[in-house]
Structures are given as C-alpha cells and as structure tokens.
Image: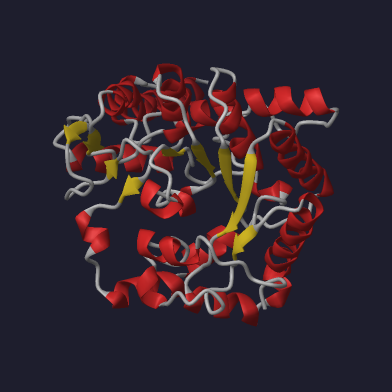
Length: 354
C-alpha cells in the first residue's frame, strides 16, 4: 500500500512539474492573452509588429475585431497559405487578411462573423478554399466556433464539433510533448517570453504581423537555400501531416460552404473564390498517389461546381503548372510567396486540377 501511495505521489509530482513548466513556458500562448493583446495594440496604432512567434492567431483575431475601428473593403478568409494576400495582391488598399493557421471551414465562417457582428460588412470577401475543407477528419481542435455555430443554426444546418478548443488547450498543459516545447522555448528565450515589438518595416529578422493582417516570414526562412525548400517537399512528416486525416468528402460541410457563399451574396458582397497551388514537387507527389489525394482533387472539382452555381469566379488551382508558378515561388511544400500570389490571383483555370 505504501509503495502504491509513493507511486501515486511521484506521478502527481511529475504532473505538477509538467503543468507548471507548460503554464510558465506556454509556447503557443494558450492561456495568457497578454501577448495577443499587445499585438493588437501595436496594429491598431498603425504599426507593424515584429517578434510574433507562436501567436495564438484565433484569439488574436477575436481581440483585433473588437479593437478595430476602420472599415474593411476586402476581407481575406483562409489558412496560413493565404497570409500573403496583401493590398498589393488584391489592388485594394483597405484589404485585411483575416486568415488563421490550420484553418478549417468552421474557422472561415467564424472569422467572417467576428467582423460582421461588429458592424464590418466588406464589399468583397476573398474566400480561399483548401483541399481539406470538406473533410471531417481535418476539423481542427483549435477552431473557435461560436459564430459558425450561430450561422449553421440560422440556416438550418447542423454544426460540427463545437466547443472543443478549451478542452484541447487544457489537455496540452498535461502533455509531455508540449512540456518539451515549453522547455525548449524557455531556454531559447533565456527564461523570458518576448513580447511583440512595433516596427515601421514590412520585414524583420523575426516574424512580422502587419497592419493589413499579412504575415512576414523571418529572415532565416526567407533566405533559406533552395535545397532546404526542396527537402520540405520530400519530408514525410510534412506530407503525412497534410493527408493523414483525410476522411473523404463530407457533403454536410459542402452544404455549409454552399450556404455561406449564398449568404454572402445575399448581403450584396462580391465573393471571390481562390485555390492556392502547392509546390510543383509536392503536386507531382499528389499525382503519384491518387488513392491518397483523390479527396483533394475531388474537392477542387466541387469548388468549381459551387462557383458555377453562383456565377462567381474561381481563381487559381492546386496545380502550379497551369498557373506558371515554379519551385522558386514557395517557402516550403504548401506556402506560396506574395510574388506568386500576385501572378495567379487573377488566373482562372478551366476544369479541375490535372
């Protein structure tokens, strides 16, 4: 009995250490919103912000929507693959990129209503459509779903997996993998968590969040050799991470996307659908594994079908070859540079990706 109690005590002590280090380090800023609040203050002041590593961007977007006062003409919704859509890309000086990392369809809808509910109805919504948006298996536990849930109930559709974000955050505080990340983060930053810093420039040595919502990669990413980019295309972890949760096409998610596009049109908003390409090497790998990536190609076909239904343009494609983008246009396997976006933003492709 004493041995059992000792083991329980040791386990509890271990969990307490893991929790404490994760709470102090908290590299993803899951519990402390001071980091995102500081970032909001900088952007609202009209400055760009450097040193934005490990931002909890869904919470940032919520705080930012509450603090913003300037109207939005063009609102960009999507994932990190569209965080380079700047006013230079859209041709509209009053463009806001409201994309979040790893977004799913729920995120897109929720992000839109963060702004509409506060009186910001844009003239144009650029809706970036990802290959995983119609997959239930790719629903992200980080998603904020309040606005999404409200919309689904409004249009008579059943919302999916709502209210999971808090449970997911709490689980991380007892996670050993998160503990390892917390230790590395604290060592790297000499036991201090750096805060965002206001700058005038669009680029810095560290990651930058800009007034227009776009993201500037740190210098080591921008200047990495081509061989390193090529390696990311072959990295099994990258490839598996994208496709491992594909679960087929969910027509329930398609119906929600359909309803959302219809809703925007009824509001008199110009809807612009966009599909960003992937790195040529990655696309060729997708072609070589039709059993794995059939969902990706089918999703693009359905997106084109949706665009035709509403008589709106669908720009871009998963296929980089038909858009004229090359290996030099990517930071890694899936993230295109701003220069590439400027070239394919207005390109319409007949038919699905081949």
